Length: 561
Ligand SMILES: [Zn+2]
Image 1 (cartoon, rainbow, N blue to C red):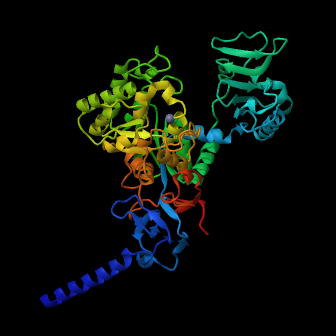
Image 2 (cartoon, rainbow, N blue to C red):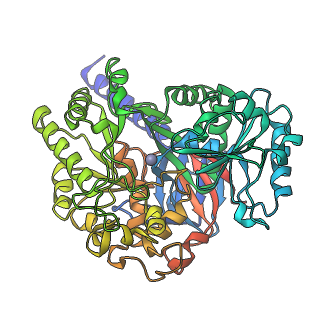
Image 3 (cartoon, protein in one colour):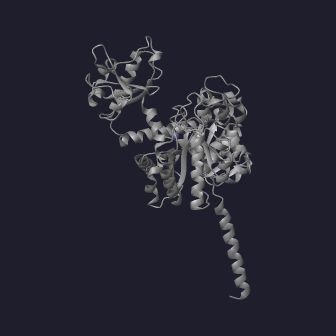
């Protein structure tokens, strides 16, 4: 070949390759959602009308016309009918298997007569596999007339072979049937344990109701959760989450049996949400010794975090404060068992951090939060600066000096706004008018440049994102006494709440490049709502329904046709 011919050949080759490539780089979309009101949580393009998806990822976000180039003969086009479309909600703090177990337990709270109570237990016993117990319930005899405690005689005839142990809604009392009392060996001769009472009839025989510590007598003979039951609980929890628009959860303190079940579901292609697990910090070596670091895993199932406790809760007066409780001047609350002594906790967390694990610490009282920040600062000093994304779970009652420290150490405030409208009914009585100003201080966090991640603590609080957003935006306590907001200066806007629930939570699990906004290249996890929460009165946000939930471009709940 002459030089001229070689050049011409190369040119021809280049032209062919380019046209070949450009034909290949625009595959047709599998799915286009159009006519939507998209709130992207992406500052580069806050709003859009349509999006295109190839496989499990978003490939384009823009106007309806922008999607034309992605339209192929096989593309499915869905008309969102002008509805609001948001990134899927990412709940940064759940107890997922507990939640699922709670869903599958018998529900007794709304029974209005002892007969209805017995009938529901009878129905449940019929469906309960041999060897399993009927549990849960949350019954409330105050709804019956007369308001008398239930007895084993009420349910024994319908549960001759199934052990039953159902709790009162406040957890202070439970009813056991005769099968359960037999398994626990509780008779007329059994003495009341310290801190508990076996309720007895006129002849001294147990009625089946066990109060406080006496409940342990039965609880300790209950079998551990079986694998099939755990799998059922998770599936039920996943269906429930999808119905609420939750596409990711961060599971606090799962057991390794839970992780195993998630892994099995992933292998079967049955995970319908994404899970990041944070087992107990006391077990940090388990992950560290095999080289697992933060956010290790697949887009569906990851680990590499540890979760610990610094104190208790405000409700049980075990949140740990600098100053005494206003309604109990003798008590400052309590540090957790893990913090005895704090130096042991520090040593474990420092090692976990050195191994590259992410650290999430439950801290509620101002002093527990301060001590946690002290530990974080010491660990950073020992192990050097790094993008480690410390998390303080709950971050409820802040000392004024500590907002700044969150920002300096890049600590994420992982908060649950529903607790604010729940505790807001009585919190002031407990901690007084001064400390209350820095309680659930979401706005002050943002003003100090602290990142928020939203969650619920389900099943302690409802899993519902619309309730969480409603709580953050209105701060209207559940008793209806603060319709304009409890500590209203801490209210967030809808946009701030949505961001904390999507990008904020994604950042808290090192996934902001893959999730948290409607952006080309990210996973196609999104939700379509019945109403535009940006434009309805905030008081109505809690009533908004989820029309459709998509995970990785696949419909996992509802539908728009
Ligand atoms: Zn929790």
